[in-house]
Image 1 (cartoon, helix red, strand yellow):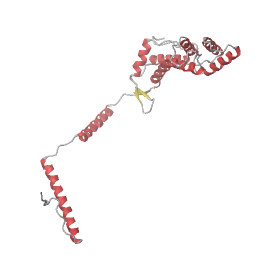
Image 2: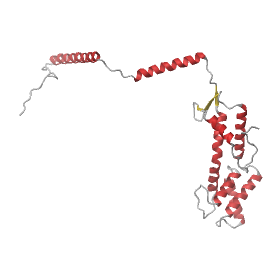
Image 3: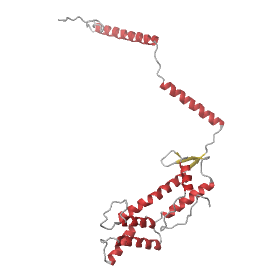
Image 4: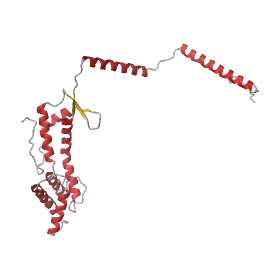
Length: 255
């Protein structure tokens, strides 16, 4: 038994034991080492950083302990305990029916509605309702309904489910071999250098020289001359007068 292990035996009636500080630190350490895989929820961890055998055993013990504590009432004893809790909760409100048969039917229906939550969560929820400390919206002048009790119990279970999810991420992470050969390392470095050089070329905006600008202007003038010559030839064939040059100054009178 290591310093971070906890007992695994539990029933629906028993709440989970608080995680020890060493165990919380252990989970946090490995969670920080996880990397995202190629799909949602897929986690990777380097073989060099993965949990050792005794660490994985401790995390597995904690996961089994929490899973057992989240189990709903499964035995007649657990269901009887759940019925007593519900009866005591409803009996604390004057709106609860006094007829014995109606009361038994109401309790039975509520117990059936709570078939997916552990007894300890219902017991805590009942205590919160009686003290008016619940998080679920509710009229304190009336006894809580089955959906309200179930919602409050689910909220109580949330911290346990979050811890269980973190444990499962670490334990189910795919272990990848991070060792590389010298040839693989050289190939990776060469590939990265190639990418960087391409990025550099694509981001550089070269300033044009005076000669390049003058050459571009000459090409543009030559292209304009060819267009004007073709236009003049086509107008001559069509019997039209020559077109006035675009750069020819227009005569105008100013009053």
